[in-house]
Image (cartoon, rainbow, N blue to C red; front, side):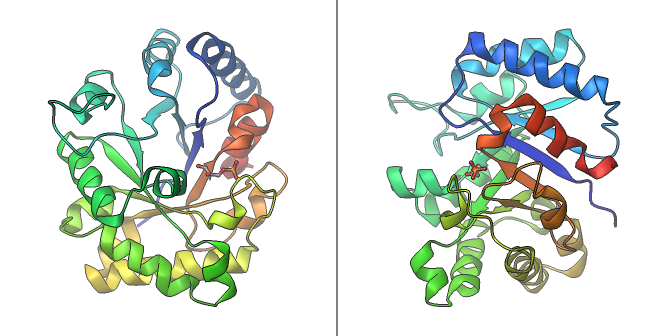
Length: 259
Ligand SMILES: O=C[C@H](O)COP(=O)(O)O
């Protein structure tokens, strides 16, 4: 089966809803100028909650070929969870993707595999696609435990998901030491773990599910290094932080698959 590549920009806590208008328009015009063919790859913007309405309106109004994503969601349906946002609220705004378990959520907000698993299940139940993040820190990498550590996160975060659900989701492998540091994993390093993730999905489910799930690499992806990383057999796209805030950079990354 041919997997459709997916390039997702994670704006993190940057860009207010006014600035979002400028960024989306610039990105759109850059891509249109360059004859981007959205049939060949998918582009998703994972924006702050406060930007969702604005970006949805721009996508609909200008018929832009971008998917819309959120960066987090509650694992609860509704109720007394001050400050939280539910899957129902997101899906009603036309959100299609939700990042769950980003390493920054794990590190600063204590999210465990069990919480991330609960969030992934809720996202799926609401008809959206989770982008489930996994990846090791520097100490684990130095100790040579990165593959086993990451696979353990995969097992924990995918618990109780059906084969059909896993076939449709996106797993983002982000070695924490490569996030926002300018330090990119080598193509072989990235492939080692992404290949192991696909094998693990085959072992947990079946070959067809493993062939279908899309696996992204994330960590200092830029227009200048995207080709090397995406050239690997088990890497189907990128989760891009810093470079997604620069329209020319992100447009070049999105267009990589049609060059
Ligand atoms: O979600 C995106 C990743 O954390 C990568 O961020 P970065 O491209 O700024 O290294």
